[in-house]
Amino acid sequence: MNLSYKPFLLQFKHPFGVSSNTRKYTESVFIRLEFEGCVGYGEACLPAYLGETVAEAQLFFDQAKVHLKAMDLNQGISHILAQIDQLSTGNNAAKAAIDIALHDLQAKIEHKTFREIMGWEKVLPMATSITIGIDKEEVLRQKIQAASEFAILKIKAGTQNDKQLIQLIRKYTNKPLYVDVNQGWTNKEEVLDMCHWMRDQNVILLEQPMPVAMKEEMKWLTERSPILTIADESVKRLKDLESLNGAFSGINIKLMKCTGLEEAIKMIDFSKRNNLNILLGCMAESSCATTAMAQLMHFADYIDLDAPQLYKNDPFTGVTYKNGKVVLNDLPGIGVEPKFDLFVE
Ligand code: MG
Image (cartoon, rainbow, N blue to C red):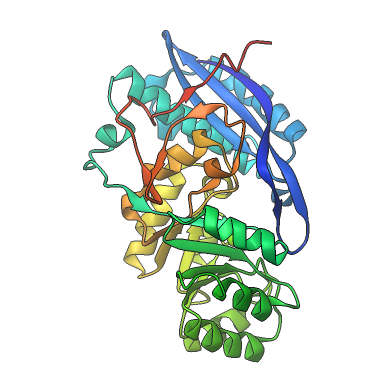
C-alpha cells in the first residue's frame, strides 16, 4: 500500500473561543492510502491542546509508510493496525488517520459502505449538539440564533463566571445543554452544588469537570451527581476505560484520542457491557474524520459531531446536516471525497 499525506489548515468561520484561548484555525494532516487502484482517506486532526504536532505526525507517517509499503490489505486490518500501533507509544491522531484510511479503502475495494462491511443496519439521522464558543453577549445571542436548527447546545465552561455564562444563554434559549469544563473545577463539594444548580438549568451532561488526577473526587461526585458525568481527558484508549472504576457515568470517545475506529468499537463494546453512557465526540475535525466517527453513531447515547459546521474551507464532503441532525450518505467506504485534488504538491 502507498501512503501519502498533506498538512492542511482548517479555518474557522468565526474565531473559536474557550476559557483558555481563542483559535482561528485547526491544523490537520490528511492521508491517502492507495492499494490496487483504490484509494482510502484519513485525517489526523491536531489542535494544540492535543499535544501532537504536525511535524510529529509527518514523522510517524514517514515511518508507517515504509511498513505499509510492504503490507497487503489481505493481511487484515486488525493485524496491520497492531503493527502500526507498535511503532510508537503515542501518535494517537496519526494512528487514527491510518485506521480510518484502511477501513475506507477496504470497503471501497469491496464496493460497499463501511457499515455494510461491518454488517450494521442503515442508520437514521441523529441529533448532534453544536458548540457555542464563549463571546460577548450580543455575539453569543447571534450564535444561538444561527444554531436555531440544532436541538442541543454545548458550551465550554471552566471560568470564574460559569453560572453567569449559563444564565446568559438562558436569556435566549431553554434548549438542553452539554457543559464541558475541560478539568477547570477542583472543589468537589462546589462541583456537586453546581451539578444540582445545572440540573435545574436543563444541563443534561457534564464533561470532565475536574482534573484527570482527581479520580477519587470524581468517583465521589459521580455517586452523588443528579446529572451525567462524562470522561473526556481521563479516557483516551481502552486501557484507560478499563481502569475508570466508577469515576464517571459515561465517556466521550474521540477517534483522535483512541487511535481510530477499531479501538472505538472495542470501547463501545466495553461501555455497553459496563453500563456506561456513550458520547461520540470530535477534536474539531473536518468532514473526513467526522464522517468516519458518524458511522458509529447508532451505538451512541449522545453525539457531539458538529465540527464540519464550524469551518469555511472543509476540503472534504461527507456527512451533511439537516434540521440539526447528522446524516450519513451511502457512498462506498466511509463516505468521504476530497473537494479538490488535495494531495498534489
Ligand atoms: Mg471535552
